[in-house]
Image: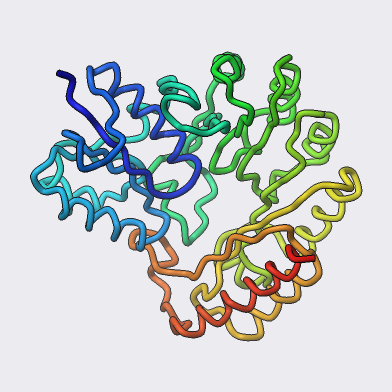
Length: 332
């Protein structure tokens, strides 16, 4: 009888895509999927190092399943690897499965009509709060033909949404051309992508989005903060003036576009006045959706060396204010 595995995924869509590739690797090794983690002989923890809270959940799972074989995968800092190497059976770096095909289809693995297609891995931006450049390394892009072939295979498996993924998806070489090539595939489906960086969002990219009739109609455009000084501390190389101009250009070219964003409240040194700049931005832009995070230090990142000066209660207050503005927009 085949041994069974269960994958527990933490973090973003990139890790969901990785889990499908990890499943492919395990299937090739003779394992079969277990619907419940309790029935599995092997537990794979696909970790996310972006936030310490996610790693805390990984530690808790390892302690819970001391008697099972555990493989640790995903975004891991060297400090976490050192702490956990004697508590797990193996540690897999994303490069070990990044180039594998995803397992199954929406009916037998992911149970979703959406499939996540990594077009690149790693990151060159080194935002001060982010661990990705240290866990996944520098940017590495897949050949366009390989991506197109994978999309075609996924569409043959009845997927209806294709998500093109990259930590900085629009730094992919000639990303507008890739969008157009995916759009030309004849099947009926919608194209999504995430996450683009405002500094790389070119006029040509806006033109390509407008031309692609299979484009989903929504963009996630992370701003992270509404104040230029905080953006500089985050190593986000754009200003709020640049960001607002970009949003205006996108909305002018594609009037019905839905724009969501990511933002971090309580970054080290963020004053109440600086936070009010973010409030002002939210009211002005009127995002269709916002993913709001309360800053927490991640060991190994430059920001972790800064004093975490905003109290927890104040971070929560700021989170609630932005959340209320975002929800008010969605209720209209």
